[in-house]
Length: 327
Image (tube, rainbow, N blue to C red; front, side, top):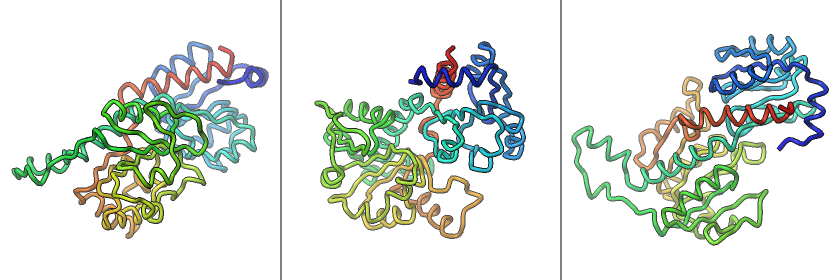
């Protein structure tokens, strides 16, 4: 919630806010801002240079999604930028430190797609446990293997969630419904245990978890956090899921953990590098292993991207921007 003091500051400096939207958003955001008197320019196919030039024209609000990197150069080119609104979760494509120096407020809509991520996490987990991806490929190729595709039931397992924010909570809720014991760790939260969710230390997670699911933001602290040393602490093999950010995981070392049995199944909705045309030789080799392994399931960063979340994200941003401006 934005404080009254912050609202007051923005109301003093922004009379008729100009909004630059440079990524695809739901019309509810554009229409809602326009109806309230905001001047909105919607250019979702704009290039980096075009964005920089437009920011020089004095736009107070910049709305982005994932593809736009707001770095120091872009921030310093802005003449009157007051707010950067990220249509999605996380702020990892914004130089927050520089934005803070320039007095630019950064907001996102992390709460808007938590149900979508919760559903997708469970789908990838169930699909992996029951060999659905491998089995479907085999059947399509007229290969009928039943024993080789015998599944593993979810009920009775212990799942660990690292990052107990909006998405972590959504995943936990779904796992509990399947009869799973849920352990949760969050460095910045405590006292959240209840009769269904158990606040746990990392040592307890290493000791007990059958399933490990990441739901943390990408920061300087979490980049490369999950590596082979992390996995070696596990007392038993795990089903590993990453639906947060790819750069949290060292891909090469994850592959080593799969090969050695530390990770017996893996589901990735994100990759360390998600631009295939920029792969170097090592990344190409790693991706070849991931894409060919029956132990790995992949999806193209769509965990939080549903028909419903598309609208929810823009609705949340709209309400936050209106709140800031006292609307």
